[in-house]
Image (cartoon, rainbow, N blue to C red; front, side, top):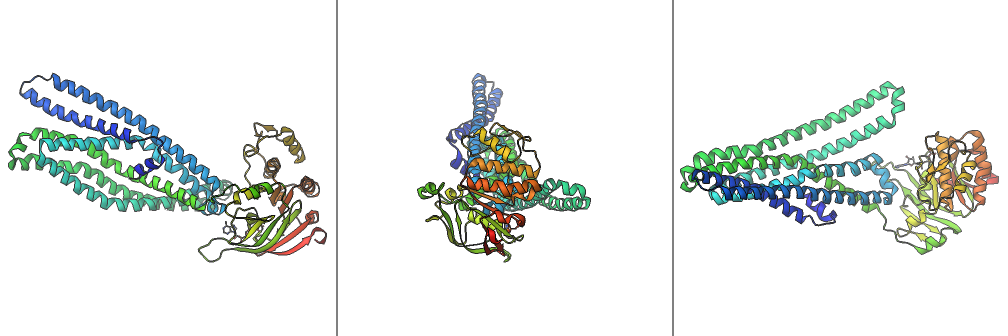
Length: 544
Ligand SMILES: Nc1ncnc2c1ncn2[C@@H]1O[C@H](COP(=O)(O)OP(=O)(O)OP(=O)(O)O)[C@@H](O)[C@H]1O
C-alpha cells in the first residue's frame, strides 16, 4: 500500500504506535460482541452478569480511547508528512530547469502539487477508520474461529474469493482513473484558457462557445470513464455485504447438519457474522478512496523523481563566486541548442562563438522567431546547451556551477513577473528605491512600503518600469532585458535609450538588450543581428 510507503519515507515520528493502538481499539470493539454473546448465554443460565458488565465497560473504554488517540495522532503524523513533502517539492520547483517548467506547463505543475496532497489530507480520518475496521475484522474472525472453526474456515474462504475478485477489478479501476487524470489535465488547461482569455472571450461570443464546447467534450469523456469506474466500484460495495448474506444461510441452515458443536453455537456465530457486516462494508466502501489516495501518492513520488532528474546538483564553486562582481568576459564557445520535439520540427539555435565584455551595452536585434530570447536563455544559463560551453573568464560553466553563474544576471523577459516584495534583496536601501522610482518616473504613482511597492495594479508599461527598479535593487553585474521599451511611451523610450541605459552602464553594469527599436541602435557599443537561430551580423554602434 502506497500510504505505508509514504509514511515510511515522510513521517518524522513512528506511526507503529498509532497502528498498535488502532489495532487494540479494533480488538476491544470485537471483544464487545464476544462479551454480549457470553452475557446472553449467562442470562439464559441465570448467572451473575456483573463481570460481563465490567468487562463490557473496560472494552468499550479501550475502544473509545484507542479510536480517539489513533485519530489524533494519525492526523498529526500524516499532516506533518504532507507538510514536509509540500515544503520539499515547492523548494524543488525553484531548482528545476526552465525547460522542465516549459514542458510541463505551470497549470499542470500547480495541479499536481496541490490536488494530490489535498486528497491525502482529506482522507486521513477514513484511512485511520479503515485500519481500525481491519483490526476489528481480524479479531472478530479470530473470535469466530474460537467458537466455530468450520465457520471461520468458510468465512475466510469467502473472503479469499472476495479479495481475488477485487484484484481483478482494481486493475481496470486504476487504468481508468489514470485516464480520467489525463482528461482532467486537458480540462484544467481549457479552464485556464477560459480564465486567462476572459477579455478575448467577452468580446467574441463564438470564441467562448467553441471553448466551452471543447470543455464540455473533455468533461463528458472524463465523466463517461468515471461513470464506468463508479459502476464497478458499486458492484464491489454490494459484494462486501452480499458475501455475508450468502454465508449466513449456509452457516445457519446447512452446516448444523454436519457439525453438532456448530449447531450449539449457532446464535453466537450468526451474531458475529452480522457484526462483521459493518467493518466489511466499510472496508469495501473505502476501496475507491484508497485507490485515489494510492494514485495521489504515486503521482507525488513521480513528480519528485521527474524534478530530481532535472535538478543539477550544484556545489559552491569559488572561482565563479569570486569572479562574480569583477569578471572581464563571458566566452560563448561553440554553443548550440535544439528544443526537444517529437515532431521533428524543433528550432535550433547556434552554433554561437562570441564574447560578451564586462561593462558594455550590447544590443541583440533580429526578426520575430530569429532566436533572440532562446539565445538569452542560453547565455544566462537558463537552458543547457546541447554542445559547447560558456566560460566566465577562464572558468568553464558546467553542472557544478550553473546556479552560481546565473546569479550574475538580473533579467526582465517579455513575460516578466512582478513580485509583491523585493525578494532576494538583503538590505533594502529606501533612498535607493526612491532614487530609482524617480529615475523611472514612477514616484507619483507608487511608493516604497513593507519591502515592496504600495501597488502593482498598474499598466503593463508601468509594471515593467517597477520590474526594472527591482532589477536595479538586486544589483547584479549584468542586466538582461528583452524588448523592455516595447510597452513604453515615445518620450520615456527616448529617455530610456539615450540617457538611462548609458547611466546604468556607467555604474559598471553590463547590459544585454534585445530590441526592435532601430531608432536607437546607435546608443549601443555593439549590435548583434540574429537570423534563423544564428548571429549573422556584428556591428559597432557607429556602423549601424
Ligand atoms: N518553449 C519552446 N519550445 C519549443 N520551441 C520554442 C520554445 N520557445 C521558442 N521556441 C521556438 O524557437 C524559435 C525562436 O524563438 P525565440 O523566442 O527565441 O525568438 P525571438 O527572436 O525572441 O522572437 P520574438 O522577437 O518574436 O520575441 C521560435 O520559432 C519558436 O518556435
